[in-house]
Figure 1 (cartoon, rainbow, N blue to C red):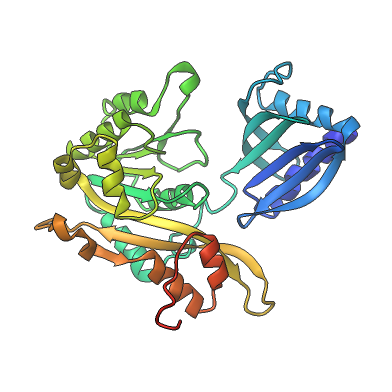
Figure 2 (cartoon, rainbow, N blue to C red):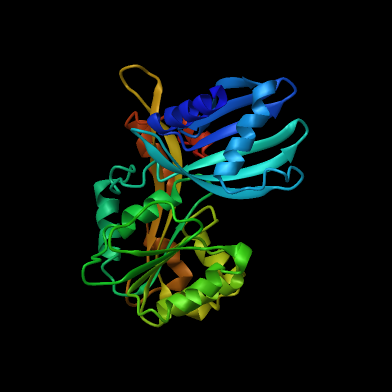
Length: 344
């Protein structure tokens, strides 16, 4: 069937170019297919109206959605494969004026198996994080806006742990990529299996390290801190803009300041920018820009915690610009403000 072939070709193409998302956007004349690559959407093709509904229904069927329900948003998951490729997609549908719009997030496709340096970190920053991960317990937080590469960085950090002699349990929504030697658990809020409920159960499984995909609520925040306080290494993500902003964000979520001071050992903030290909002058691929604060194990001055920041986002951005890896316009697009008062 033509629409089957077309859909498989779209997915195969998206995987081959390391796209992060496929968008199927309905219009009055059909469905526009757009692929997100290096953070930006590119129009790939248009599916005529007479075939659009068949295509949307096929996606919904394979994603475990109800094809008869077109009035409410739905979420699903699809393990797609053909003779030479395979990929897992998190699928979301949303009713719109001209029909349902579908977005397929290609999980585990971009950056999941890269080293910290391959993600764009300097050698010194990667070494600092590697040393931080050798501390036997404490809270490590990766932060940044949606789509900034937090999960990729978290996965790269987890792969540095010694999982032959220690136990790592991951709570994820959903599980995005396999980590050899880890126990990975998918959160399912539809049946009441939330991060907080999962974390309570995980603490009874004798883990050394715990990964919490995202701290979304007060209960999860407090349980994460409790886990770190009772001798576990806890890695997680939160939505905040700066590394130091993690402190205020977790306090706003109900964590007592004295408990946070007893558990937080490091925070990393990041953004993704497109890389400049010096030979062609065009953009190719993306790299991370980072801000990192590491809390020393003893004698911490929490009134001057900014002294423990090893690199700031603006500093990371300036370095990338000066070395020709990206442009000031790209840095600004990522939301990093560059102070140009010094003439640079």
